[in-house]
Image 1 (spheres, rainbow, N blue to C red):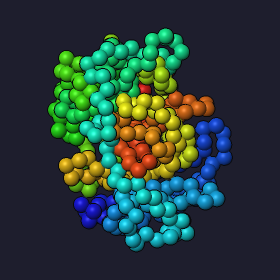
Image 2 (cartoon, rainbow, N blue to C red):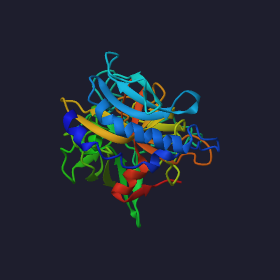
Image 3 (cartoon, rainbow, N blue to C red):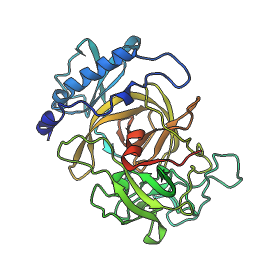
Length: 361
């Protein structure tokens, strides 16, 4: 597959402009001058096909190096990697050992099963407006359920409801946004299949219906570059609310923000609830493991740093800006991670693909 990718990856990554959002959201100066960032991205894209052929390399991206200069990161599954140069076209190369990068669907090891079948407060007020205890994001919750909680196709373990979105031009049509591997079972589902809350791993049953799979972006496992792992399910405002549980950030803001290096972000997910991190790198190209010896190649991805930002079961979480004038605007759709980093699809591309917008404040 890596040889096939060498032929396919000659074209540049799709959304260069999304990678050029170099200004921090609070009016801070850019970490990397725009011209230098463009040059670093061009260099990364030129050399990535060859670098990805090296043993144990799982990805590349562009980050801020020493002195605020552009730098290229090479991610490896182990320290047993050779052939990585110290620099590429004058840009320093940083080697980061992460282990394998995998889709973050709920797993049977390292996680409790929550309180499947229990009842909880649907929350969604952003905190401070109710005396009820916070909802357990793994439990079956009263309808309408908040975003950021356990969900899935009945044949997968569990993932996370990212957001409630509506059809552009017809706000009466609302959908639950998550990943393909959460709602479409890695392309194996059929349009019209039920989605449930909580996911099966958390005790979800067919009676826990919240909607039907309506569309998904196909994931290619043959070396063809992917740009998103995303799907939507038709639902109603009576079944799905548009805010997190009461211990979360509340309702996402309308609108989106392009990822920029060092941008502070926040998310709420099924496994780790609310966590904070920073955009560590942009324009990521990664081999993502999906189990059963299946690997998909993704380009133009966002890399979030901060240990503990995500874990298995957080797939589908919406990542939003943490603070400033763009606070709570959507940045990315979480779908994979490993070794202290989290990988997300740029949210604007996802929304355009489905013709929807965040149903936010």
